[in-house]
Image (cartoon, rainbow, N blue to C red):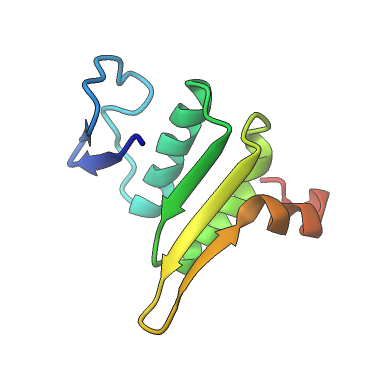
Length: 104
């Protein structure tokens, strides 16, 4: 499992990765949009399934908007922990049910 986090303008990872050109430095002010810089990087490096952990519902909306722009990504999941329950949302299934109108 690869884990990435933004620390200021730099990116830290649990891997000893030297090529961070696609993700660092990162100048996105909003953490919600920074997430998708990392998702796009994962897809460029061959990922076909990605899980995002985010409590903010904005991330779910952004995921639905961004998924059509990443056709190589077959599965996109958003894990939303709440005080009462934990949900894993299948964004790829939500987009499929919504149809083509989810394009950016």
